[in-house]
Amino acid sequence: MKRLDLHLLGPLVALVALFILGALLNPAFLAPANLSNVLARSAFIGLIAIGMTFVITQGGLDLSVGSMAAFLAGVSIMAMNALVPLTGAGWLTIILGMGVALLGGVVAGGINGALITKARIEAFIVTLGTMGIFRSLVTWLADGGTLSLDSTLRAVYRPVYFGGFGWLTWPIIVFAIAAILGEFAMRHTRFGRHVEAIGSNDRVARYSGVDVERVRMMTYVILGALVGLAVILYVPRLGSASGSTGVLWELEAIAAVIIGGTALKGGTGRVWGTVVGVLILGLIGNILNLADLVSPYLNGAIQGVIIVLAVVLQREKRAAS
Image 1: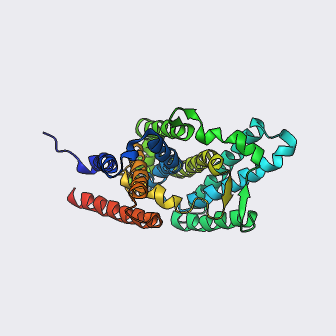
Image 2: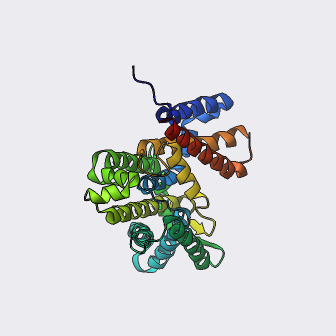
Image 3: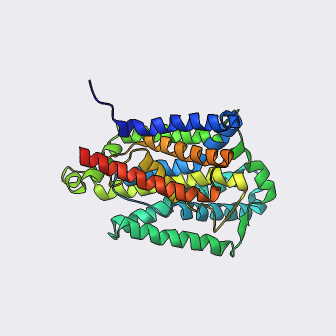
């Protein structure tokens, strides 16, 4: 009889355990409104984490996604505010603003990818640099304050975050669709196989006819596009952006990917595992807030500990195999 892979099932077991723990600590945990809120808030990180799964699987890393999200949110808000006198405070203006966020994400991801693949600079150095650039730019655009969406536009845009079908709001629906498409791409397409092959051994992949630079570039473009999509869903929630927007989003996205079983050194990617990792992080934060066990200011520390433990478990798995 085949032995169960605890490293594979571990995230699912942890997710079930968190549901049980949350229900025991506070009856309000299982309320549809609370679970819907957790899923909607997790959707932003979830979309980014799906893209990060492809980047990490091919052996890369992107530390700039949180700052990129802040910058794209600020630029899209400025674009929509500037368009109001021309196109009015309606859906045309909002759709154009969405296009700015999405196109901006593709361009930003492409810049990261080009610097890594064409200029041959380490991904860590490139994205560390662009992390500072994006954060500085949005702070400059906001003049150290906050960029706020026009109040009339905010009322029209609001349903993109709060609307949907019952407790299934649009962020949850978009996250679910992106997860299904991401898992299909990783498991059943040539692109997904090439991503894993490059992460396992880029030299062998190159000898096998894989266009390594092109595939690597595409992973960063996809990640940038998903950051833009996350921004489209995030802006109507608060209707503003500042230099503090998206802080630690890169940590949460990387943590979700590693918790889900994707190898930090590349070669193995699990989009479904990333989704489980995102839900685990979201539930941990929600349970801590409902039960008042630990200060919410320590959420970043808890996520850091989880990353370290997940990497330790991966090393133990490789040592045992």
